[in-house]
Amino acid sequence: MNYGYYGWFVQGNLKYRFNRVIALEMLYRQEYYRLGKVWAAERRSALRFGLSKQFGQWTIRNRHRFEWRNFEYGPNQFRYRADVKLKPEWAFSVLKVKPYFLEEAFISQGNFNRLRSYLGIEGTFKRLQPCFYFLVQTNTMTDKWNHQFIGGFSLGLDVGK
Image (cartoon, rainbow, N blue to C red):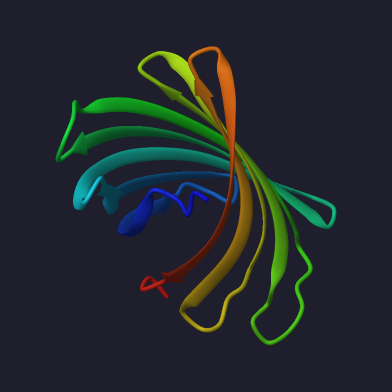
């Protein structure tokens, strides 16, 4: 059974919202993953451009992310990611929990090579932003597709309030 490749990561970002619809972000991620018997690092700088619009009781967000991936072992590479997220405006519980659906596509080295379909819940409690999700990740392996089922958790901290 495959329990995944990545161990953990820390990511920070600066976000500038032009208005209620358009936002620009700069991100940096330090990621650690298992490579055989050793832990390897990836340093990832990214620029993300996003659009968000409310339609009735739902919000649709579309983001485009341009990443420079610097690997401790192996060649560096450029990657483009695009996602669309659908989330209701209503929430429940003291954590303001909202379910969401997200679809994300990846292009690396000029080739479409990954698709992710997320189903999750996210909340907000003061400055903390917990998120639990389940996703199906589909990777291209030459002319075949390989599917992985992944569960995840993230905890965001908003220091800008």
